Image 1 (cartoon, helix red, strand yellow):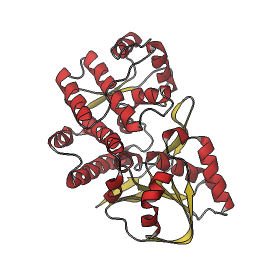
Image 2: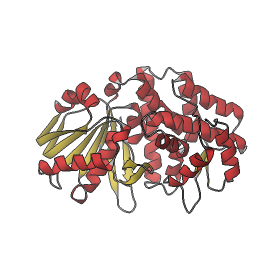
Image 3: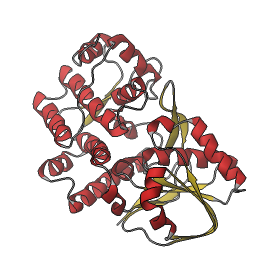
Image 4: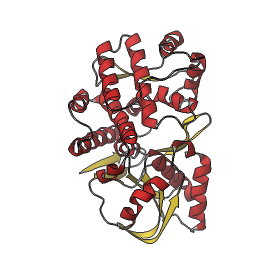
Length: 351
């Protein structure tokens, strides 16, 4: 199956997202595969057997969100310079969302921009992170605050790579699928509620529907000027949680799952969402092994961290919330601070 991205402004950019077994790839140029030790040990030989290139280098970086930094990008760049890569060279992101984000960002920087392709190996990266051209790294101030919109030349999604994915990583991907269903497609959410998500056919359908939704949204709004911002549902809260825990306690999808529960609590408080619908979302997250609670140690500090998020603007915090029936959404930037803090207080203040 092929889903196409076609961006028309400011210039036409087209590429395909292929959901199928990985095909042979021939490149008349230098190629560098950026990966981590975990993915490399499991699947690098499989990928190398599919690639023919003028020169093929493997750049291995540490595994984990805590290494998603400028220092790691600098290390990748150094290896490219040492291998004498040029503007016609190609990077391949072979891993999860961290690998994809950093590889894309590195590609945008090297000699002012070289091509890259995405070969995602986690459910989260297959359904979301590999599609749409968001790239970047974290710093002490927050998540993905340094980065660029830089589109890949192609995305190759092979569900086979999920066969070695740990259950916790699979669940983290489910969180991003739930996010899209709650915001845009209640029928999709009902499909997930009815089916066993680990079933191979169901997993493939989740990928197909998620990628189709994401591609449609990106085609309308590449740089988050409008509808694409809705995909940050759960992230406003989740990014604060990741930052407070130094990107080491929760996987990104786990933090997003908790963030969605917090966003839903705010939506219920505002009368935008029913308690029953909030319960539906809570149940599907919990039934798939995702955390749904976080003890906020200091409500004021948690609230202040919102202003470091990319979605804040002119001193206003954007909250993406369900609005009425599941599958519909709203973006609000005028919610009273007192109301937000009351909701945050529901998640418990520690010692």
